Structure formats: C-alpha cells, structure tokens
Image (cartoon, rainbow, N blue to C red; front, side, top):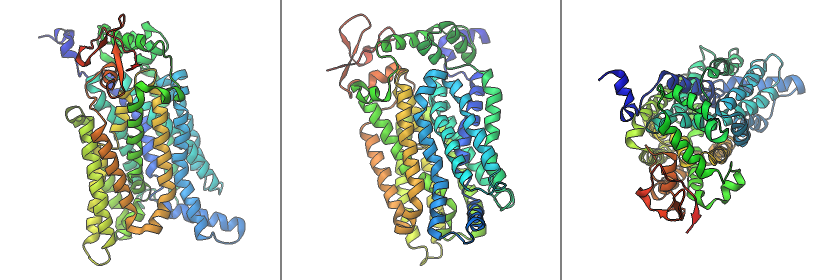
Length: 512
C-alpha cells in the first residue's frame, strides 16, 4: 500500500503524529509549562543564601538583624506569592482565551515571565528582597495562565486518540523544569551566594523562545470555528495539524458541537456553577485539583531540602538526593505519556493517589523513628521517591487532561478558570502554612496529606468515569445520566439512550 493510500484511509490516519503537531506541543510546553516547574523549585536550593541576603539587606537598612519569625514570614511569602500569582493568573484565563485565543494568550503571557525575570535578576544589585516577592507574584501569574491554557490548547489541537498522551506533555515539561532548577541549584553551579540571582532570572529564556517560534504554528481549530466562526481558517489550521486535506469528518464534529451550544453562548463562571448538566464534571475537577495540590506534593518540592535534612540526610548530600528525586519524577511522567491511552485516566488516578496515600503514612513512621534507628533515613528517602512516582503517573498530569475532556467549547474556559483557581489557592495554602505545620506537628504533618489522598481516591472510585478515546460530545453524553439530563436529537424531541447517540445528533441538556 502506498503512503498516499495509507493515509487516504480514515481508519489508518488515527494516531498520526505530524511534525506540526509535535512542534506546536513542544514549543508551547517548553515556553510555558517548563517555567511553571522551574519556578516551583528554583528557590529551594539557594534558600540559605537568599535568606542571608534578606537578613543582610535588613541589617543595612535598620542596623540590626531580622528576628527569626520575621525571616520565616518573609521566606514563606517569597514561596507562597508564586501560587498566589498563579491564582490571579487562573482568574484571567476565561476572558483572555475567549478574546485572544489559546495561542494568542500564550504569547501575551510571556510578558509575565520576561518582566519578573529581569526583576529577580537585578534584585541583589538593587538590594531589595521586596522586588523578589513582587516578581514571584508576576511569574506566578504566568504559571497560572500557562498551567490552564497549555492543556486547553493541546487538548483542542490533538486528535481524540492522542489527547491523553499529548495532554500529559505539559506536566512532563513541568517536571523537566523542576529538575532543571534542581540541577542548576547545585552549589558548584548556580545554587550559591553569587549565582542565585542569575538562576532566578533564567526563567525568561523559555518565554523568549516561545515568543519567537509559536507564531509559526496554528491557533486551535475549535476556537477558530466555534468561537470565531472562521470556517476557512479553522480548516487550514486543521489540515496543517493533521497533515492531510480531508478533515471534513472532524470539522463536522466541531460544527455539531457548535450547534448544540449555540443557545448557551460562552458560559461565565457564574453560569457554569448553575448548570445542572455540568454538576458532576465541575465537582470532579474541583476535587481532583484539591487532591492534587493538598496531597503534599508542593510541600516536598518547595521544602525538599529541609525535609531531607529532617530525614537525617547529610547536608552535603541533600542537593544530589533532591536532583535524583527530580529525575525520577521526569522518568515516571514520560512513562505516563506512553501508558495513559492504554491504561486510561481513571486507573492512573486511582493507582497514583493510592501510592501517595501509602507513602505518606510510611514517611510519617520513618520520620518518627529516624533518631532511634540508624537506617531509617534511607526509608524516608525511599518513601519520598515512591510518593513522587505515584504522583507523577496520575495526580500530577491527569487532572489537566480530564478538565479538557469533561467540558465542551462553551464551558471549557470557565471550567479551567475554576479548576485553576482551586489548584493555585490550594498550592498557595500549602506553600504558606507548611513551614509552620512542620514546626508544630513534626513528622505527623504527612498524615494530613495521606488522609486527603485517601478521600480523593474514594471520590474518583465512586464518581469519575473513563474518558479516553472519546469525543467531547460522547463524554457529555456519558455524564448525562449522572447529571439527570437527557440527550435529545437535533431536530426531534425523543431522547437518545446511551449508545444510540451518533455524530448526527446534538446535545441539549434538560432536567429529567
């Protein structure tokens, strides 16, 4: 069979990765998602030197050293202003993606990376720790936008049978960003008294790459057709992404979705919260994002060095153990890319939260008995690595994928706005309170995280359904029974039942 005949058969075209799709995925993930991960971990390794800078600057101004509680508060702010900025960025998602498009929003978002990169890079020169805290808010806005818009963009440009794998790529670049910050944070590289300002400022480089290269790639065809009504440009974009001219079937599915949603228009967050037809989808993404962030993962990333120190790891070995943990995270996220379409979203979530729950319990035990047993610090390290493995295969990447899949075009921006706000609010909470939690509860801190993982696992087991290899309309139909709505035909009043739904049918949500 010739290549033309091969790709001329629609059944053979499924799963084809074109150069345009691959490059659009890599550039958007590197330019945006990488920065999210990088800025999660960038303040961890040089924290001692940054605190020393805070203290010396304060002494220059006031003639006396900082009190310990003030330094702890300022450092907690330096860490937690990043997720607070992420929350602000999430609140900007819906208006920006509806006005500028998905690709346009990613390009606009680079402002919130380049400006704070410069601010953090010159912070030591201008002797201001306030500028670091302000810059962390701005780069947090960048992360809040990118963590929602990149999965939305990639989910909309991907064929349904590759949507899961491509949807995990942003999380893969987040883990690569974390690992890069950990490697650069080694004392002999940039994690020292002279290199940390440059280390903070390097976050602007991926933004410049994205700003230069992403304009060469197409906007989301679904956005172009459904929200802008530009059939011609949508067709060209889809042809470019798929690598063939015959895209009528996929365009028909988009038009079908467009017709089914035309009466709704673009849903605001308030409208989304009042939609009975989206009740369980909305509840599910809120629970999964809360579970993802309150499971303790960011406590480990933000304060990995102090956790390893508490576990008894020697100070000169901590940075290398941290880098090793980051490398494990990257490897397991790569594994998730390859297994998500076979295993499905639900199974990976269940396995991941189960592993995290067990690891937190064992870590608590290990930290409790580390002083009485000489080998217990090795158990603590093993627990953290097992936790990272569990989080990397499910809780970290999958919520972004299912948020894209559970909502159609009219509700997706508002859904990401809600999911992102929950994500970053919980992230902010953990970053702010964990130092005090660790000081007050000691080894028992992780029991709280274990309980949250268990509660999330139970919810997923009872409520969340599998979405792999389904169109957005099929997923809406799948949730119809749980939401107590009926699926109606486009031009009739008789509801469809389950598998009777076909591509010629529309969804109109009405209560039973």
